[in-house]
Amino acid sequence: MKVPAPLPEPLASLPFTLQEAADAGISQRRLRHQGLQRPSRGVRVPEATDTSDLGPQIRPYTLVTDLAAASHASAFLLWQFPGYMPGTDVPLLHVSRPDSVAIMRRPGVKGHRGQFFADEITTLHGLLITTRARTWLDCSRLMSINELTVVADHLLRIPRPDLEGRSDPFATLEVLEDMLDRHKGTPGIRKARLALEQAKVGSDSAPETRLRLAIRDSGLPEPELNVPTALRPGVVRQPDMSYPQQKVAVEYDGEVHSDPGRIVRDITREEDYCRAGWLLVRLSKLHMENDARTAVGKVRQALLSRGWYPTR
Image (cartoon, rainbow, N blue to C red; front, side, top):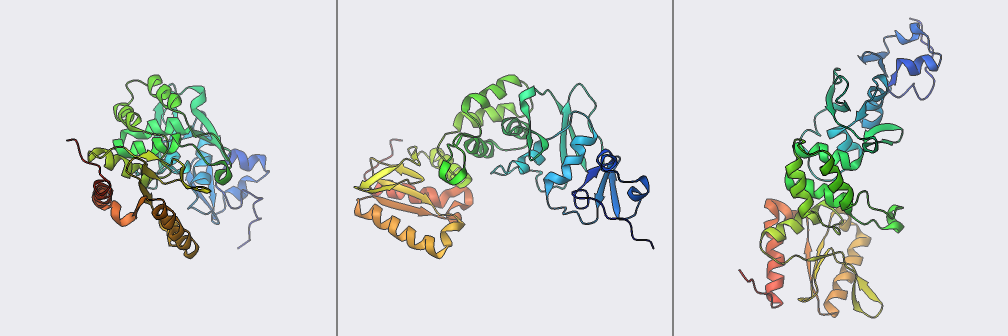
């Protein structure tokens, strides 16, 4: 059997459209070779393709059909949103088009239609995709209010320029409110409004948001979020949550805290709080099980030990 001519990069390792193949000078005979999969009309996939990378998988579908962009569960994954959204574990590509044109119907694709304003579509590594704010709204139909709040907190969070290379949040409260006002009557919008009402700037992670909501729902006072706290001259700590009046700090220790070097720093951190008369409540993933009941119980006990008393 004659060995086919190699495809030029990047078409040799990425899904591509027939138009891209024509632009690259690839012959029709080469495109008929059995080494190329044909998942849908106008799309070809080389055998060497890494199918775990969602962006390259969905890109040809936004090119082969006019006015198409990655959206919904696919955009949720591509934007690396925190929180849980049903359907993100299903191998379907989600693509949206304006409601003025036909919905996309292709194997392996979940097509959507809707009203889109020009600033609700952007690009991510060259891929047309719904903006973060629009994606948050689109996903609201399937997500719980608290998980929508997790994503809203993520979008509103003020970044740390020295660690993230950006100084602006992904969205502002005004941007998310405007998104809801634009699309009144959209399925899921009521949940999105309720989520936005309980969203708050300051949570650095999904577990922090879930803990904050659990604390609020339990009747405990709302803590301050990631506020720099001077413990003594030259020593400033920024606890995930804090109650300055009771001198109680709450820290969620994720998996990164199992690193040997981090363990040493965590010990120093705890000693800093202790010397300053603060009580540090350390929480882990285990404490967050069963709707964070154990975590809330630890925070409650710490507050009670520092003189706080429930008013109801």
